[in-house]
Length: 454
Ligand code: HEC
Image (cartoon, rainbow, N blue to C red; front, side):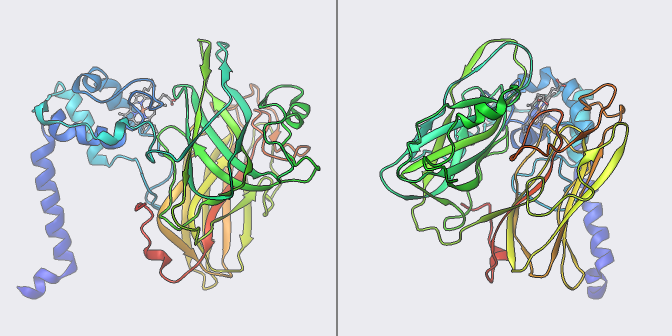
């Protein structure tokens, strides 16, 4: 008996039968209070709440029941919750995907007439209603207000956000708080450490990326030191995407030094189409570190403007689906914390992995169906060790055919990297292929650091 019980196959069989026993009990007539609300609070309400970035709230029984048919559809199609990464490939913090069982619950709940269950004891998680995810900031920096005009078009800007402080200070995290979360689609920001002779407040504050004189407008931001030298830059000092909350690594990991004369640059900020004239007055929340920065993090970028070229070069002929790769060998042991795949509209799929010197593969990220709208910075649950001598590979497909509903051109035209301008571009005529890796030099034990514990 004992040996049978410990036999792996019989253990599996026991688990499987238990699992189906429970799901048969609970899912035949799922109700809101018991079955649906916990899934919604976890996977939908972080965006579907006031100021959460989604167009309507999904909080109360009424909110959800009213849209049950649509919800059954968008969950079945895996359109919601938006989480493009393949969770059979690798795991990240705040993963929001539904299991087949959960998708099934939404279908059954709708078909059975949206039973409320005992909603009297339901409690909304309080974390849903703090405007900032990281809590009370040490410093609030106002962002230049942006007029979003009612032309129903996407808009892309570069914004200069100057910031003077008394002395050098270690920063743990920076959070972008959008003034108009219904319009702000995404923001990528970095930080420039200007020298002490430069006035961070000089120059213009805002550039329209689509404007024909972009280049001269960009110069008018005065993002160099006053003597013409380029200031040191902290990449990805802040990022924003609805539902993708600010990253704060455990105390001691990451962060950067803020100089007395600094400039944050939102490069770029993307607003969705608007039918109203609105003004976005956003803010940066700065969290200073309580301890010195012990484990500095670095960022390396492969592909467009990065350290590893794209092969073949990123020019995608009209009517073609093309594959492009980029590879880079690393010469020190590293612990990867966060990865960010980046392409534009005609990206089709994306995969990145490392091959160790012994031939083993370390999965980094796989995005089977690229979604331009959802470009998260994916933070691993634990640092991923990649030993020295490994090669990191990026493989991406681009679909420049007329079958691609996201193709900006009809009929298709050649789309590619812009070769004449330093820095990323957002124009629809431009494609990009980038893989940004945030890492720290490996130390023994890194694999067991729980990155969800601030
Ligand atoms: C990361 C933020 C986020 C999460 C999480 C999220 N949504 Fe959404 N949802 C949006 C946004 C933003 C839209 C508006 C459409 C768009 O921008 O793609 C949307 C649109 C929708 C729509 C309308 C679709 C349409 O075509 O009009 C439904 C229904 C919906 N979401 C349901 C859900 C459900 C159910 C969940 C959880 C299982 C969920 N969403 C999770 C952000 C989110």
